Image 1 (cartoon, helix red, strand yellow):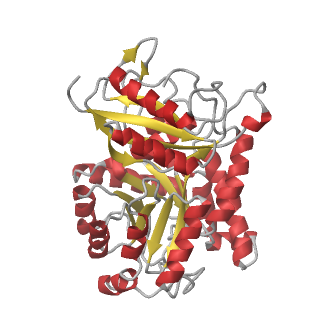
Image 2 (image 1 turned 135 degrees about the vertical axis):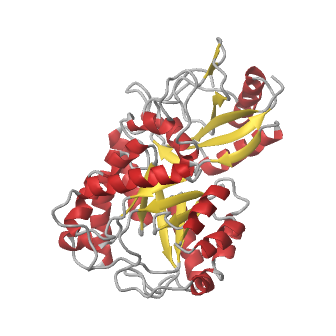
Length: 439
């Protein structure tokens, strides 16, 4: 074709050192001429076997999507993809057998391709969690050629199970409501991040100012003074790893957000709801994702709450619709905006419970949804005050969010959540059968 086309390639691995195999495949595809622009977060899904398959084939996959460009035509790229796949796998085995790597050519620009060797768009793209999950994290509002007006996010709402991304919380603050001071020192923060990443966190959210009720508000310079010793070190630690976690900066100060973006932060988590001109300007000019949270005040105030007799889901949804119109008028790329309904911020415990019960409702407005409920006071009547019991109560709520298809779940104890979710997902059948069709 000669012209650069926007291309999406899916990778999966469920045999041997899965992460090493994925890294090798990425490196080899680049050597073959594929130019990578973005690597999705890595998600895990079940193997999706039939009852006739051997028990020892039931190994979970790690999956990701590459977004990039190539000047070769689809068939030329397919030959390269198959060469890399067979080189790493040392040949082919039975279709459903465990593989060091599987590579899928998913989309090639607007191409609609149907041959005996190649089908584009990939026939399983909008139906299978191991393909659609990573795609939604990269291009949620993309419309698949030939599949009607639905976006990828729309298609994901029809999945039996849409895998979430796990966001781990790192507070470099002395006064957080749950772990104040524990990770304040740079070395402690680094160790905590590494343990969360090892446990499967796809996003790490770093915050230096507590927003609990009664918390002391920091100036931008005070907040940066807490972040500066640890943020550059964290980003440098993972910068060269194609499978690195995404790093999120929890701040409502545009000056701090700007400094973080200059260092390479992937996400700005704005608890002030992307409401200030400075933050809107950053969201418009940068390529990072931005999280906009519903709130009544920052920090949260016990005296400022939604009316007890209101429908909290309807009120928050109305706020979101109004914001969407304003963001659109401001020229923001809505593909890069995530919405957080703000559990605990200006809501009673029962109102927060209602938001947790209906969190996925907000996805119908075309944005990915993030929920941060971990260890919050809504858990008080469900557990003791110990962190262990609050984490267990948080886990129960998190699994309910998983059943709804919430996109990002923000938690303190990543290891507890990912280990439980891995087993829970296996019994949910969340992987769906993999295609035996050509890549």
